[in-house]
Amino acid sequence: MTEKQTWSQRFESALHPAIARFNASIGFDIELIEYDLTGSQAHAQMLAHTGIISPPEGEQLIAGLEQIRQEYRQGKFNPGIDAEDVHFAVERRLTELVGDVGKKLHTARSRNDQVGTDTRLYLRDQIQQIKQQLREFQAVLLDIAEQNVETLIPGYTHLQRAQPLSLAHHLLAYFQMAQRDWERLGDVYRRVNISPLGCGALAGTTFPIDRHYSAKLLHFDAIYANSLDGVSDRDFAVEFLCAASLIMVHLSRLSEEIILWASEEFRFITLKDSCATGSSIMPQKKNPDVPELVRGKTGRVFGHLQAMLVIMKGLPLAYNKDLQEDKEGIFDTVNTVKACLEAMTILLREGLEFRTQHLTEAVAEDFSNATDVADYLAAKGVPFREAYNLVGKVVKTSIAAGKLLKDLTLEEWQQLHPAFAEDIYQAISPRTVVAARNSYGGTGFTQVKTALVAARTQIAE
Image 1: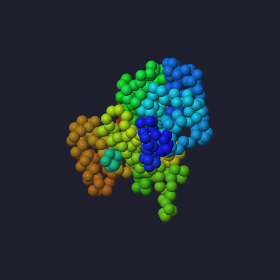
Image 2 (image 1 turned 180 degrees about the horizontal axis):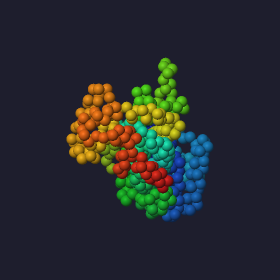
Image 3 (image 1 turned 45 degrees about the vertical axis):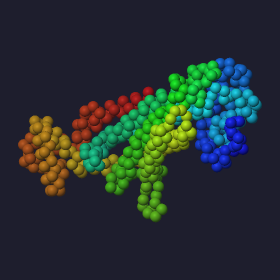
Image 4 (image 1 turned 90 degrees about the vertical axis):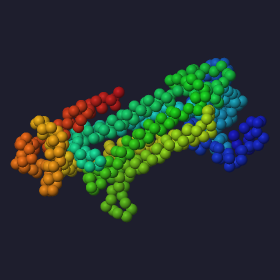
């Protein structure tokens, strides 16, 4: 379509040039061109299969569409705004290549079911790519975790020192988040992989099409059972944006921890030059740009989810032009998630080092072993709540005296309660504290090693 053309004999004049520009989507939906060509080839094959067009005509259409694919890949097909959208651009070029038979391609099809098909073909491809990136991210987490089973790191609640942890256990928490992301995308994929092709504009078609045949050609698992639903459904897009938002939540949480760990106040990690930047005015600085950008980009993905929900919330059936606005948010979300996963995987693999000696010192210089003192007394028959209150008092007096629990003499321990014995020092050493938490899923070294084996098996499946 051009601004000098009309849609059909129903129209007496063309669109105003500014409205034509406003209406056009070719600037961004060109992203769908390969998927549009694939979907159109399947549609042409189905038309020939059902006798709606002749087999030679079907072959002409398929060959012409393949030529457009090659022209696009070679940079020779670059439709402008006069094409309005990718679908018209392809159809117009096809007619130039094969003549009037190109005008038969749109038989028994609407742009409504066409764009729905294209979007699903695109999204299922991107979901598979993101799932693979998640596996690579998980693999790097496991590599670091396997090297740090007995490296200790302070654990926090409310950003206050809580209990010491195995560093591997800490990293495995992010592995599990990524595993849920991987599984969630698989669940979304099932609802993405349903074909709307053949639903027409909203009511189906009078032609004797075979929707199951075209769906099989395109490797869809099923077809929409209701033509109205088929052209107006964007639940799959909302679900994808939800899943993508959760991926970004998890990457952002890890980013926040890395930013904290790299600070002078924590000093848990050192950033390598390959993944850090400097200051334009302060030469001593090394900035954690990668995790900061990931943390920042999370907001744009959330924004696309919110925008999609707002687009959908008031739409009557069936297709409405508002749905043109779904694509840019989906495309940008895909690109953002993929870029963030790649950057974070590189950062973990080659951009940082854990300062294990400092971590060892850190877990020894706090009161994060206080719970283990209470557990020690409880194991000797003292009711836990009584032990809990007693240890709270011990911590209070120790802070006042400028001491840690490890600094108390055995006499001081026994003045607090006669159940204390020489073994209290071993019981509250950070390594013992961590190793002792051997309940299923806990941070004990035995549990962590078991979890690592299970995780390796999981990503190999």
